[in-house]
Amino acid sequence: MMNKLTATCKAINNANRRGKKSVLIRFTDKITRPFLEKMQKCGYIGNITYIKDNREGKVVVELTGRLNKCGSICPNYHLKFNDVESFRSKLLPARQFGHLILTCDKGIIDHNEAITYNTGGMVLGYFY
Figure (cartoon, rainbow, N blue to C red):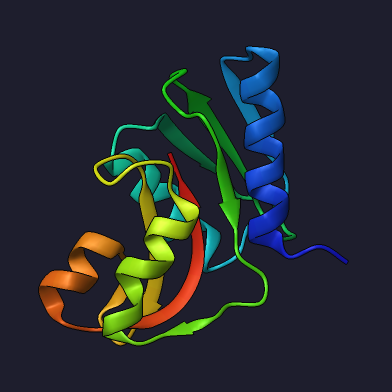
């Protein structure tokens, strides 16, 4: 069974490669919602519409065409504050390009916020 965040990223990547304007994601949980909201805040995706059904819920995500790739990291590695920059350089293509998403005691943050807060955390995924 695939991780829900992995399945979400895979669906977004496939729809983006096909040139679709929106994608329906049938699997959401409490981790995928803030991940998608971070992507929206950074401008990589458009509007997010949550559809409530009596099961897990669905999400309609509008694609803007700015996203090159998004992915999740399984297993979620624990990074110390000193290791965030080296892990970012392994995953992201350039220094000022893309975001590495971490979960920590301050919530779900990207690598820039982790550096300003002087904190590490568990790596969830990335997008650029």
